[in-house]
Image 1 (cartoon, rainbow, N blue to C red):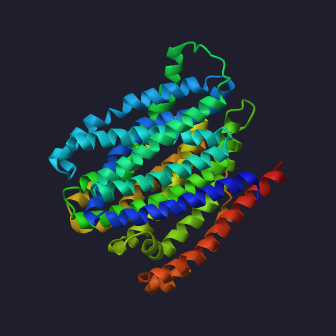
Image 2 (spheres, rainbow, N blue to C red; image 1 turned 180 degrees about the vertical axis):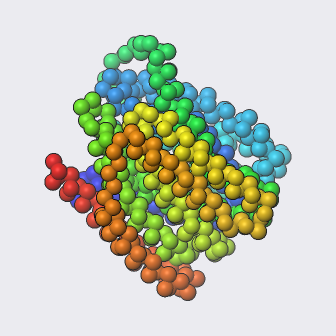
Length: 476
């Protein structure tokens, strides 16, 4: 095992342990109805992140190596932090629009505003600066500060809800404090490592702004549709669906998102530094670099999908309080939703590598429209609320198909169908866990079953990684 893989894998494993603890604690200290409020607040913060912070962060990732080579890295990061600070205030009018939907006492309105502004600003700078350490080759620092962000956030959030008030707001405050501290710390580390930068006068500011807007505006529009795909049901259901059912639904889908994102980030941390480095080199073939990324990620995503479908009731019993036992079906369905989303993200990377981000707008606007129309129907017919994951699936599948068509016009998409079929066949072994569903009510047996299949899952991930590395050596 090479050193980079060992560090990243160990870090991601520890992050997942902390994430498991976080979900266990969160599901214990918050009621089912409060969980619905918690995810509603996250949706508001997520809207800012997707529409405003994410396009800037993606542009920073795309240009990171170029900024480093031209001695403008810290100068650009200073600008980004200032933009995030100003932009986080845009959540205030957004909060005011949805004030009636936030189920908290009116006297807490100022606290709601301050909490969300803190949270969106802190997650924006942390999500941009900490990953930059890894993309620039400082893997040890990246892993350390990511772990500390999650661990300190869990500790502070737990203390806040136990010592002050068991409400979602105080949990978010604890998270925000940790995110902002380690985000700022990462900035100072980068400033120290690149203190030798020559002061460069940035010429033609208008042209630079035009480039950012050309790159980022389509992403912002796309992310509005993505938000509609993933988050809109929380707004439309807020007043029409029983809060208990809404809490179970949002928790199951939210847990699926967290678990899938954990694996997604692991492989992004392994493969993205090389990918971004290659597409920033003038003589490198961006088509080959992207196809390599696609074929590296697809096997792992297939393994993850079947693992979560087969192990859903056991995973839920281990990670959540028993009051969320009805969320297992939403966890399994949410896994399929998330995998389609993750595959779509890979295709979106092709539009970014080619600097043609507008090619992703149409697909996600189509997918978002499909989902929102379906959600609006269910909001007026609450008896169909359990079909919500299928609405999300249809939206994401529609977006993915359209996105595939657009990307295939930019580059030649090379998918090894025989290899993926083998991955599917191996993955069906995870479905054998369904034979033990009667044991899912036991925490002890659930832990044993998760450990057994979890070790097999980790073996498949490692085997896939090794095969990719070996294939690269042979091709070279």
